[in-house]
Length: 413
Image 1 (cartoon, rainbow, N blue to C red):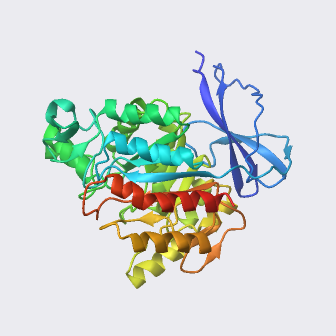
Image 2: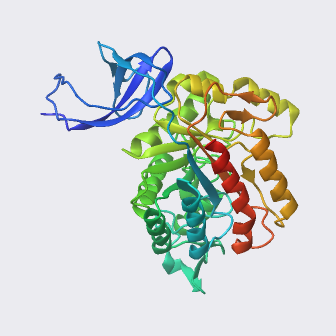
């Protein structure tokens, strides 16, 4: 019996550094047979010039589950690629009407941005229609074009509305990066699932109030279904953000990375993004090199001194990930995060001036002032919605626009 065809991911490897080349198809083989795969790929510009072996890996990434080429391939120094800049909007905790989302797309397109990252799920709400979770139009009320769940009482985008935004983004050359945050920040998802299946069903998959049990096969199956669904909702998106932030303390460093690697494998040929704070220094070698890391904070901005010290002792620095070949995007919480309340213009002006004077794509830790040896691949301003005094509107767009423009211009200097 012949084994089915596989997809293999290729990586350049030298020492501890690994750089993603892309995915190739492998034809079906008889048991015990081998084959040679030929592919022409461009080395990432962040990879230093030199000689590399090529790793071919199938399934969920494990460092021991890859085959290495016997011969090496040389790479030359490449010019720096144009930074990939964008914007993250928290559409879970704050409802953005479709026209406003389209205006944000236009802001990015008009100033050289490349992507709009939509944070779709959080503890307070699931911001998009989801048959997997039971957030359907049949169980929602429609008023003035806004769907509101009868279960959570919170508004959400229908699939049709999400695709309207995605179509507009595609026309303007802006990539949509949808984020479904797992395994944490699942409280709203659990509420929806309880309404559909009951608490006993949900207890099989959860660890605590808001986190999936990463050891439960049913939890992994649910996550796989959620990511398959978001791929269907945003069929033109080539990247998906899988969350992976603010984990509970019961999952080991290797367990966190194993979860992210398994989710990445489920996403096939999609580019996979994840937050940095689930990655410990000790587990970097186990992380799938194809996972693009959105680096927001070394210590999670905790105000507890002991917790801060503990996190800084074990978590991966941006410099550790950079040295290992990970592709990084700068989401620096000091310079690039917004948690707006009353839209004070003085606050916006100060943020913009501070960013232009002190931030760069090499910045990653405001506490130490540490900078990377080279720039990250891009950056995004992140607008969080938990403290907004009023629903998002044109006023919020006008307040955030100078920050977004300043980031794009500074990144391209």
